[in-house]
Image 1 (cartoon, rainbow over the protein chains, first blue to last red):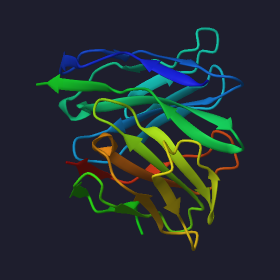
Image 2 (image 1 turned 180 degrees about the vertical axis):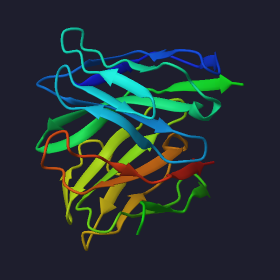
Image 3 (image 1 turned 90 degrees about the vertical axis):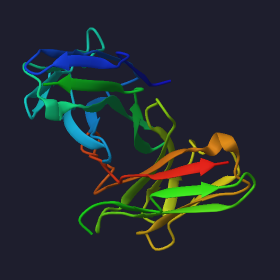
Length: 114
Length: 117
């Protein structure tokens, strides 16, 4: 079945460091790929998405490129801030049984220290 | 409303009791999803509504779990004879239109944390 595997955390970085959180997926067909973020005490929010191969999603300085050949959607940011501390979830959108639903990875907790 | 509202935010109950969790989606969103998030895990799909009908309930773990959306807006997740293993955060999400692949951006509520003692 469809699944998402993402880098286990926690990840701790200093402010202005470079961030990569790896995400690979297994899916039939052509899923859409997403990164969601969960800030402390808040609900899941969409960070960025890509709907087809070679698309790049970007938002708030974060980027991820849909790589079909490596079945990956790694999240990157060139210079993290303390306010980026959160849990990040990679997800794919699959259409099975007539409905489209998200399948999530386990999440990666990021802590950015000043 | 402006966002997806879930009540209660926290619920503590005893093993064997009945629990209802409520979700009030964004006005006009026809698609509604329930997910369950256990500690240290990503959200797991439970059930999806398109309008009033449950279009996909393949994620419900067993027949103790049931959800309704009688008027196509508010939804209630019902858990009978709760067990300790049901302890988790139950997330609700809504979307404007689920029929366009990849365009289905889900807006999540803050969740209802259920603790079964």
